[in-house]
View 1 (spheres, rainbow, N blue to C red):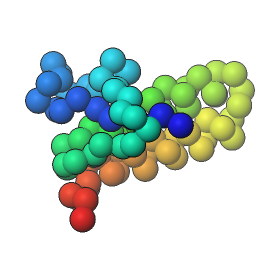
View 2 (tube, rainbow, N blue to C red):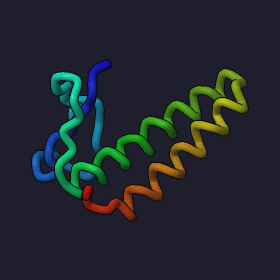
View 3 (cartoon, one colour):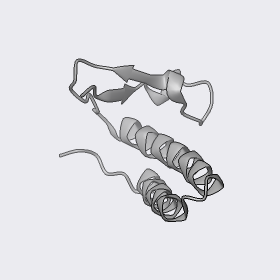
View 4 (cartoon, helix red, strand yellow):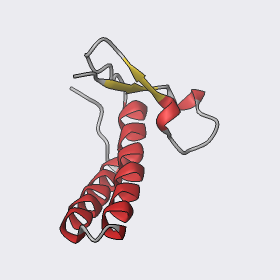
Length: 85
């Protein structure tokens, strides 16, 4: 399994995080600070929202529901991320 990490938020051109911002790092997550964790939460919210729309368009309503719940959970974490211990 390949772990994912993100560019530092200062390297991003805007507040959106996209697939081009993902960097694989030797199978080990390298999440060092609060900004990285918040970027990840925002990215997860974005992609799960898109997947929820896709699932519902294919009439996979329960899957769409669960993906929407994942989007809401990720969005909540984006605003309340705590620094790792």
